Amino acid sequence: MKQRDKKKTLAKNERMNAVKVPDLDELDDTREQTAYKTLRAEHKRHETFKGNLRLVPGRIAEIKSNYLYIVEVGGVYHRASLSGRLKQYSYASTALSAVGDAVELDLANAPDYRIENILPRKNTLSRYAGGGFQKEIILAANIDQVIITTSWRMPLVKFGLIDRYLCIAALEGLDAVIVINKVDLCEDRSELDESTAYYGESGYQVLRTSAVTGEGMAELKQALQDRDSVFSGQSGTGKSTLINWLEPALNLPTAEVSDYNEKGRHTTTQAILIPWSFGGHLLDTPGIKTVNLHRDAKAEIPRIFPGFSRWAPHCRFRDCSHTHESDCAVLQALEEEKLPVERYESYLRIQESL
Ligand SMILES: Nc1nc2c(ncn2[C@@H]2O[C@H](COP(=O)(O)OP(=O)(O)OP(=O)(O)O)[C@@H](O)[C@H]2O)c(=O)[nH]1
Ligand SMILES: [Mg+2]
Ligand SMILES: [Zn+2]
Image 1 (spheres, rainbow, N blue to C red):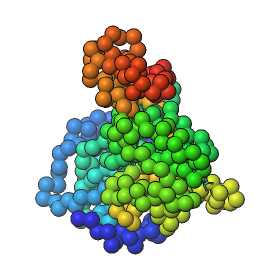
Image 2 (image 1 turned 135 degrees about the vertical axis):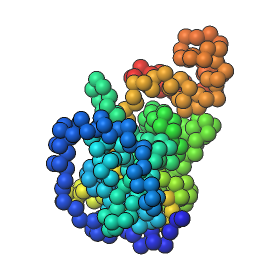
Image 3 (image 1 turned 90 degrees about the vertical axis):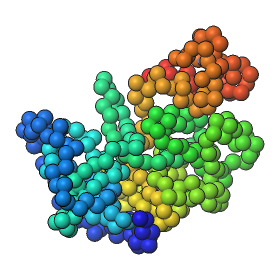
Image 4 (image 1 turned 60 degrees about the vertical axis):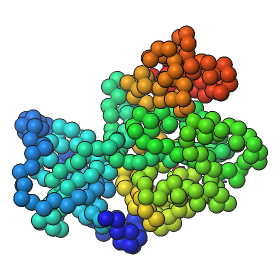
């Protein structure tokens, strides 16, 4: 199915230039009037009215507006719209479609491709808006892994933040790879080894990279190959630099570039699925930098906090919070120094924040 050769020729900019679209966002205001239609349309969503139609599988690469989608079909990008039936449904739910969704397309009116079906999601990557309701904003669907990007120095590595990202990944059903970038700034490798050992012991892949010396870049490429990944991490840790190193054609703005040339700075506001020339995709998204955990996550954290799966099943109580309970395997691991006190404190901080 994969047509690598075609993908290789598709530099991002080329693709974007080929897709010229008017701004249709203002049409969103018709939402209210069609609310009643939505109620009727919802139960019909899974019916196929065009049973005799040949549907082709594709993937949503970008959502320009409610009316204009960019879909990837066998490594080639096309413009597409939602079928009327799905369009009605989308008024009720902004989460109807997401970048990364697997879809079925009707090509009968090519080049106007129509999305006829959106297939069930394997997982979603969400952001939670602050405020009372913590509204879920789906950034993307069917992503394989999160590349949690930190830097050893500048900015200083924050393990508490790594823990948060790892919790989010676990809650969303995404694999996680930890990248400690800027290791060229590390003078004492034993300090680096010691402070990251816990994550290795807990089963996570920990990569040390440097875009300056090239260290670890082959391993990073290997981890990304043939998978769909999203880079997340604090500003300045080197996400764009690493991505540019791997795929120079993308030419994402980095700190240095944007400092000197404000005009050249273009910020992504929507998620986009970009193919790697070596296979797999990069999900480029702006929203992931803010790491809110949903309040509902509180009950899950005692089981999914990094490393805890080794111990939590052995606690006496199934819903053990690992704080005051007797026969708590996590507290025992803490006592035996298998669980570093810093990680346990990080766990408590996350629980308190929810
Ligand atoms: N010493 C060193 N500096 C690096 C390395 N990787 C990136 N940098 C520098 O770190 C700064 C920030 O890099 P970016 O790639 O813009 O960081 P980012 O994570 O994309 O930041 P945001 O887009 O703001 O989230 C730049 O000045 C890079 O040159 C590295 O491996 N070693
Ligand atoms: Mg960047
Ligand atoms: Zn416990």
